[in-house]
Image 1 (cartoon, rainbow, N blue to C red):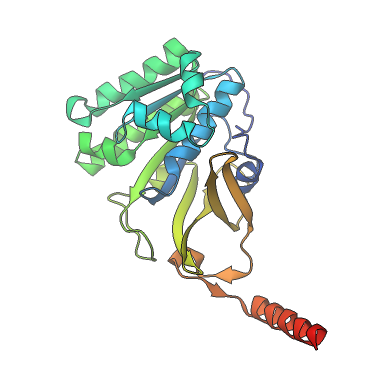
Image 2 (image 1 turned 30 degrees about the vertical axis):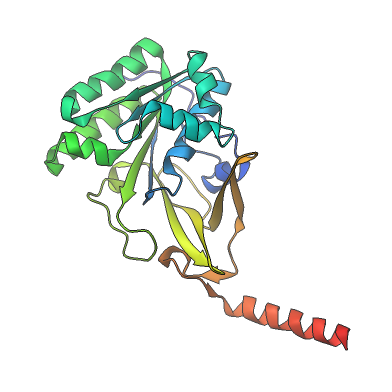
Length: 265
């Protein structure tokens, strides 16, 4: 049955990330984070869980692909206090073995987290692991749709990860397509610039409202945690992996060079 809940936006405590999502995902909605391995999907999801814990709300992470100690070490290294929130009883991190759990049994685990622990943020990390529990894609989407409907009715914010094959380039592929099931979709990419591999983040869908249409650089810092740059308006082709300067940026740079040359003369 549907629970009454405040349809407020869920904040991450990272101002630029909230801005990118038009204030944040709405309570009771699902967000899919898509991108290659190591692009930051799990770290962003952990940030939302810890932010919820800081508000006194419960959260749960169901990890198919990573051990609990590994998750805690990774987040701790970025200043995301997941371990502290877990020790305080506000976050539950469960390692899930898809070989030992059917989708129905997994859905039961999630329901228990919501009904017994009052979890307000649920992370499924990742759908690739979930697929391994049910190789038949048509059944997978039915189970996932039912689970997301239930979570939405309970006012739970759900974050799902989907790892894409490939690292740099436009030919990024997923083993399955569940983007149509999610209310919001965040895309992460690697791109090459000045001999370095960097990360980009953008929101391509938010069913419940407006979102920023720009692409920002995504950075992870041991002191500052998750950081987003200003919108990368001076480039195009970011999501293909190789940047090209816009004509306006080229003219601006050439004018700056010319002015600098005149000043030196």
